[in-house]
Amino acid sequence: MRHRTASTIVLGLSALTLLVLPGCSPSSPAPTTTSGSNSAAQRPDEEGDAKRNALPLSSAQLRERLLNVDDLGAGYTRKPVRASGGNDVTVLGCPALDELGADAATGSGGGLDFPRSAKASFAHSNVGEVTEELYSDTAVKLSDGTGRIFDAMTGCPAYQVLAGSTPIDITTQEVPAPRVGDERWSHLLTFSSEGADVVVKQTAIRDGSVLLIVSGFPALVDRHLATALAKATATG
Image 1 (tube, rainbow, N blue to C red):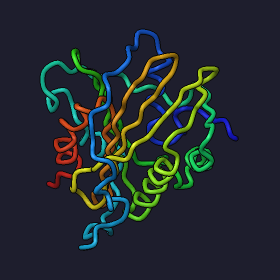
Image 2: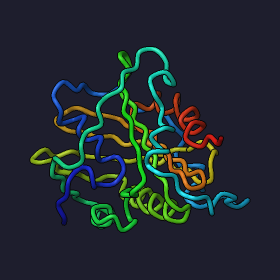
Image 3: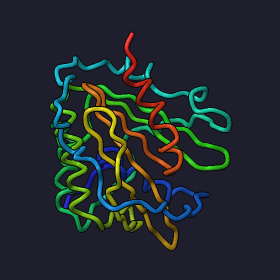
Image 4: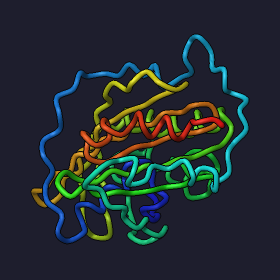
């Protein structure tokens, strides 16, 4: 068992801060979904990945492609992105995720510690929060790093983390992802602690050398995914 900061734990564990920060309320129940995923998504499409040789974008280019409040519509405010480092997190009950944490911490490609990245978080006044992350690297590296994480999460449908001294139970459910981009993955994660539940949806789309991850309140993820992908992959 290893210890590391929340910023280096794999996809989704950053959402546990929703449970340990004051003023957070329990989420509404997760939407009903069809079990399984159309993400054969976890591997390149059979018709081939025409953009596998696309050159990576810089972090500056990725920042220009992030959503802004004008893209989202009324009721949204941009939130400051939390600095890396902070709460110590211990993963319990999922050796595969525990092992991947070490790769994420060292930037060796087993986690989402790609050097070219950008992130933006938004809060809706009446609904919840949504976060967009963009990464860029070779198609092979993006595919391998993201696939390993989602495979590990699928293999551990229930586990626990300790955020400092706070135990948080996490369950994951793979759900269908829209058939866009070259590869796609999607999960619902339920974070439970002290009688409160937070449901977070994460959908990841790889398109050539760009990886888009939209996470947060499930309805907001579904609402803004297409706009985020169009902006992230725009040419010219």
